[in-house]
Amino acid sequence: MKTVKTLLAILAAALIAPAFAAEPAAGEVQKTGSEVAEKRDDEAWTKGLISGYKFTPLQLWIGVETKLFDADADTVFCFGLLRLEQKSAVLSLAPITLLTDNYGIQLGLSTLAIRNYGISLGLINMGKNHGLQIGALLNVSDHTGQICGVNIADKVQIGIANMGPSERVIKKYHEVPDPFYFQLGVFNGGDSAVQIGVLNYNSRSYIPLLPLVNFAMKKDGGK
Image 1 (cartoon, rainbow, N blue to C red):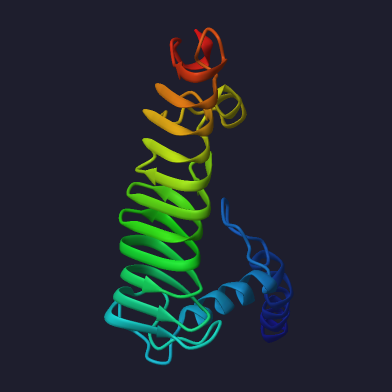
Image 2: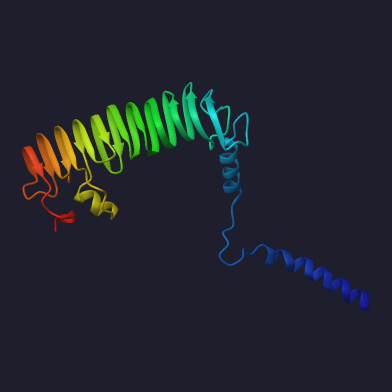
């Protein structure tokens, strides 16, 4: 009789345990199969033909995704036949270049640096600019844009058309971007301290739209 009770207890435990095991712990997010697979795909994508190194003096991207070393490695020279997508580089060259951090010269038809501390040179340049962007067609940085020009550390814009942060940006994103100190172009827009151009719109001026010269005269938000 005692043996029967023991077997029944074991059987009950076997049936009940999975129900409790299926419940995630407090605050724990249960990952789906697709999320796990996606994470594995991301990890696999960063791997190069030679893997495991966090720094390499030379990186080569052979195709769209095929590279010599891992994509999350810091590099000095980084070259791509079609494109490259690397953590950082001092000199990078490809038709399409994507870097997390650019510490030197970034060359391409289209360049993207999450943080640019050097020089981005291309037809189209994008990313938060702490250095120099030289764009034959377009420069895009921290809520700003520029057509055919030079952007110096998000403080000076010289180009055909320059657009800096404005009151609209402040209201939309609930933040106050650093204003440009100087804009020189055919058309200038934003809230820069000084604007010189054929037509200048300044959201912080008492007369927002002026030809030739305009100045920021009010505090952020028009107060």
